[in-house]
Amino acid sequence: METKLANAGDDILDEAAEILKSGGIAAIPTETVYGLAANAYDVNAVRAVFRAKGRPQDNPLILHICSVEMLYDIAETVQTLALKLAESFWPGPLTMIFPRKPHVPAETCGGLTTAAVRMPNNRFTLKLIERCGFPIAAPSANTSGLPSPTSARHVFEDMNGKIPLIIDGGECRYGVESTVICFENEDTVRILRPGAVTPEMLREFCHVNIDGGVLEKLAPDAKVISPGMKYKHYSPKAEVYILKGSTESDENYLSAKDGVKTGFLGFGDEKLTGDIVRFPYGASAEEQAEKLFSSLREADAAGCTEVYVRMPDTSGIGLAVYNRLLRAAGFRIIDADGGSDAVH
Ligand code: AMP
Ligand code: MG
Image (cartoon, rainbow, N blue to C red):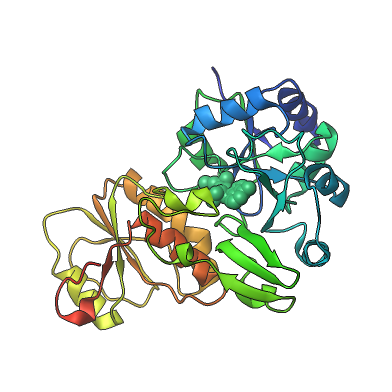
């Protein structure tokens, strides 16, 4: 199959809508990462998404909507708190989980009785959903397990030959996937996956619990609310390690490395000796979120076999950066201050 790349705009809207209406799939831009879109109500189209990504069948998809009316078509009940959060954060990077209506296919929701819903903040994609008239199921448009795509070029790397159309909407604004929450009671939510809507932002409205799986490695047989949390994720081919020492001890650790092509994502103030290849990352959590996935992909393209990433500050969107990084690194943290390679 030939894969067409087209700029987001009104002239490609009809073609994209036709593909989705006739049961096909296409990649679309959002403000978080690129999505691989299908009609959420069409079981065969949804199956094609799972196939193109190589995604495990029990990892549910997020349903993308363009109006609150569409939410009522999906959700059996919508709490007052959910409406308040929708009013404040939609369109935007917040995904909420609701009990689903019977007509929402179980396949879309990984066999669960719930559905995850969000309204993306991208003009083209909102228009596309409106034109289609159904919610669009869209996981990240990468091959399952690889770093998520934050540009159309990344999607092309993974999906060339597998899908008919990639809509190029430029670089994604946030660079990490949406915050996923479920409701524990009328005034408490649980964060299952952190994103650009931060715990601090949600606390303005309700109590916020952060699920243990956000920062901890789950036991292989652990019961999880969000199946996506149990899979290896976001990893390039290179082995990724998190460096949690002071600037100086991390510099010393890296300078002593020899023999393998080594990549580094740092805050920008590190002085490095030797043949370490630097990739964009940055000092602020926002920059790190934007750059993490693309830099992990670049490190692979440059032939690095090991990549070291400095541990982010975990406040704000930093919690999302750390959550993705932990999974990319398979929870390997090197404490260069500890005097030894304390790999946990
Ligand atoms: P992705 O499609 O790659 O952005 O991943 C979607 C994330 O949302 C995964 O971590 C899923 O496990 C989670 N998710 C989607 N639907 C549900 C649901 N009904 N219940 C719990 N988690 C969900
Ligand atoms: Mg994904």
